[in-house]
Image 1 (cartoon, helix red, strand yellow):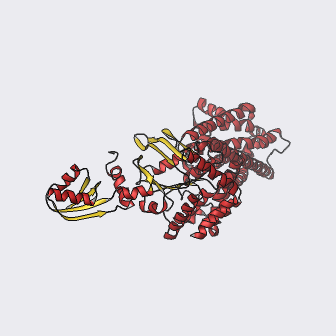
Image 2 (image 1 turned 90 degrees about the horizontal axis):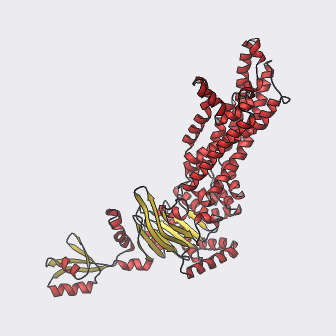
Image 3 (image 1 turned 45 degrees about the vertical axis):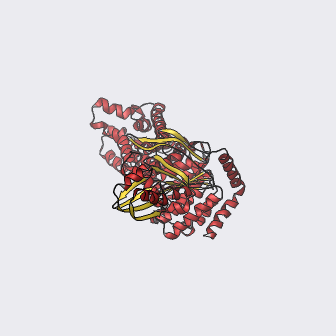
Length: 253
Length: 333
């Protein structure tokens, strides 16, 4: 089992595209942190006093996380889908023998990479966005803010789960294009909630697996409790993982 | 050639303790009338299409077994099932009495080459082997050893995307040899190799078998198997057509060419006498009866022969003869 995880890591680091994508996630996080801080600051300046009083610097600075999660899911998907694309999956499966162990090894790698990349992305987005807000003379939060600490501690875990979700799509759909497209559509669906009938929109915002976990970190006043939100995403990823494992075990490669 | 063979032995010598035990194991199993690889009514159906149809045979240690059949006969599907990649619709296949998926570190028991070109184009040859080695807990140094063995040491750091088919085949064979396995499964390993490479593979396979390993090599070229294999398993349309030592195949279909100058219906008369007759232009191609017997029959019938020439069928002819039905008439057999 240890060997299989090491093998997955060897595969990951030996093709430059993978570490590059991981690095890109962090760079994009910095970029969106800066961009959305700028946008939030511009809105703040033109807002009424009441709106200014309700301004949440953390939420303003983290709007870009919805794009970052898509990249993180793609990273997870690629760990499986590129193997199908180039046909190396057959050598990999033949070398692993027991398929359940192979799924576990891939999940272990994606969990580790997802956590590290997620932690870097959240930290960078926090630092860049809040520094930008400060420089523009707009209220900002810092490490003494409990919401900020919660985001820095739990945000990486949410991104890790999103990466694992991507992996399950890669394993099940066996193609980079369909795994990435499906993952993107799934994760961004709640963005459309504003143009949906209110009932459906509210449901998506509250219960859709990724928003269920992100919202308690960003706007806890109108979302599920933190534990419930995390639970929804964890349960969803677990179901996806079990179904991916079952399909992987019983299909020809 | 000889230097190659010595290299195989030397590598084997590095882990000789284990290898020796493996070979003992192998002969024990063979002694019990078992093969290292054992297929039992193995069947694979894709919807209506039956790719492999009730295949039963053993692959023995210490020999190169040629797995022959025309394209689409089911060779690759069979090999995938042996490797646990495709799951059989029914029937079983075992390696050393165990299902492939139950092997603890599969590469230490079975080395395989399926699709040589299934490589990530941006990954180097060394990294490709490194990940496979690590997945089975093999030491990293094995990578250098097998690269040396297949003659790819200079290309170790090059990306597989720039490899010729021949280099991919060599890399695939390096991967198969990583775990110093006692069973080797190679699907069309000579494809894309230059004459020197073909000769190299031939020698390598013979050496590996001579060390007591079980070697199963698929091919659609009888001529190649004629010089490489000790035993043949011939399939067509997913079914077993023939199985046996290579010698049994060359003798099997000795033909006699007969041309009749006077006397109609001699072909029918020969068939009546128990021969198998095919008509080719004005010639009769007779199998199942010797030339002297045919001559005697002709004399007795008052038939005048213009030609009577025995022709020892080449292995290639035998193969064509054996697989003709399965290629042309789809499943009539």
